[in-house]
Length: 115
Ligand SMILES: [Zn+2]
Image (cartoon, rainbow, N blue to C red; front, side):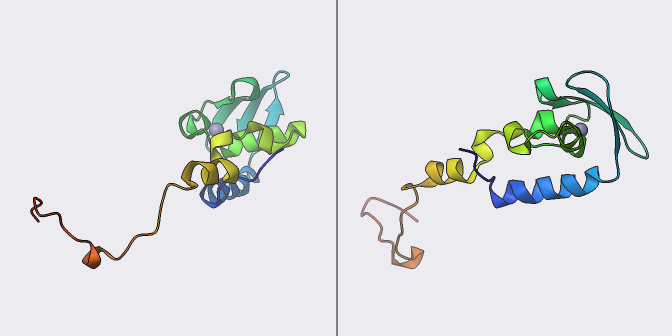
């Protein structure tokens, strides 16, 4: 089952999606694309989950070039998102870890502790 990404990642992907509207893209191979902006030419390899701009490689979040290539192939963007960015994974990570506590002013000190 595919899940949505966290709101933070969703915000980044929305920004990159808007940036992708200003690009042009040519398919150079089955999963290789040349993506042109007004200033640069970037190369996307969907099979490697990689773009020469290095955003996708470094952040593991799709860059505008990757998004454009995925749309050109009519692939599902979720198939290229890392599972650790999903809301389900985030909730599983922090589920039952952060417990409610009293206010810091109410914390007591052990007799051997110094402030
Ligand atoms: Zn890129």
